[in-house]
Amino acid sequence: MKVYTMVDQETCISCGACGASAPDLFDYNDEGLSYFIGDNNEGNTPIDEELLEDLEDAIDGCPTDSIKKSSEAFHGDPANEHSVSI
Image (cartoon, rainbow, N blue to C red; front, side):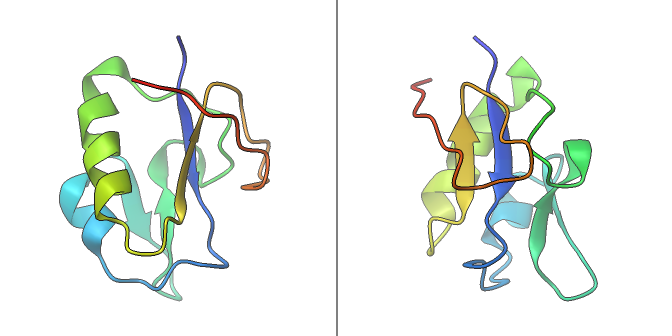
């Protein structure tokens, strides 16, 4: 099963938890907001299987639940959320 992610930058508080948990997945833009590195936060690129545990760690550590994951592509819309279990 493919897993997609993106950060809802409307709720991100730039705490740095996701970058610390998953530096291969998340970085910060000029405003300090987190984004998914794989596709510049569009949510269209599946996560490499070996990084899924890091994704879960980042999701668990996000105090605002801004990191979204889905079994379908987000197409740039964090509200386009479909639950998946890993």
